Length: 195
Image (cartoon, rainbow, N blue to C red; front, side, top):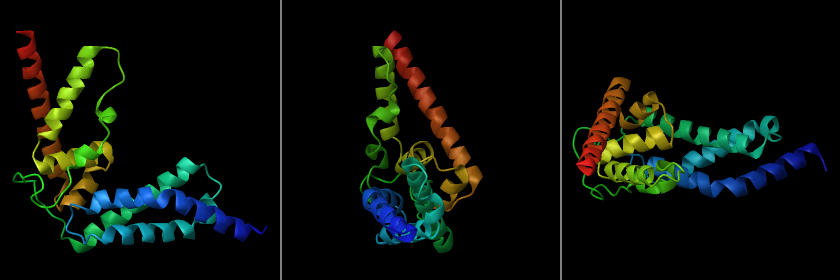
């Protein structure tokens, strides 16, 4: 078997094992943006083409490294489209959007509950994390989306600004305000339970 044939076969297997999850990932990014719904598929296909171009250099890397490279490529393609279109929705940044009003999914609901909870035998800690999850779910849609992008998708504040069409300082301010609000709500909830 030639090296070229081996590269094609490993790429085909990689594509088969990752295409579905990358389409879901792109869908979560594109779903609530002003980009056309089909943009998610285009982003993923473009990302796979980019990966194919460098496949000979990454084909023999461990699978998690290749998946990480692909996921980063999908994220970067999405951000590029947002920069080019400059039509990304700003909904929820300055006003609350009713759930479902704009056809959006609740992105925080996509996160596994285990993300928000730390494995612990301490029942009080588990209750505290459950309350935090409920508080995040009750945030206005835009703030919830920012939390999702920052803490689940691990986008930088610059990248979140690109997605929402605002500058970095606006994102920092919004995230800081949300964290302070959550801290205050958690503190007052804990005090109520003590009294």
